[in-house]
Image (cartoon, rainbow, N blue to C red; front, side, top):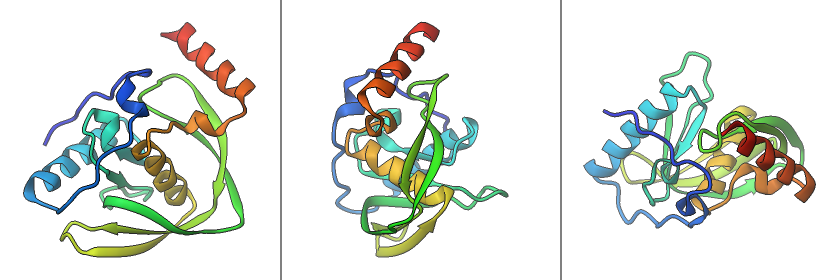
Length: 164
């Protein structure tokens, strides 16, 4: 297992839609293991494969307080979102040193391929719902700051540039 470095913004892969996973193999499981190690080292509550340069629709999410309970997702897709929104301070290791408040649905139902390669469905609430939506954005070539107004996004990117 390996901790990978995250691609620095504005690497074009962070703006590229990741490829579907056709089947869950030992190689995919090894990528998930590395992603969990990388997420824990940050520390963070989620990671999408494109963040470390792997252009596959893979994500891991662990919002548990005790850690070690990561959900491994391949080809995650949101089936249902709550009407109620939740605001959370979001950040990304691809653009360190800055963060912004983002409103997203408080709960989502997600369909994905699990570790056994079976289609699974799971409800995520609170921090895990925020994280899984954040990871799916990464899989679609979007960053959390794309959800901000143009003025707020420009301010955030200028601040990040000054720090870099």
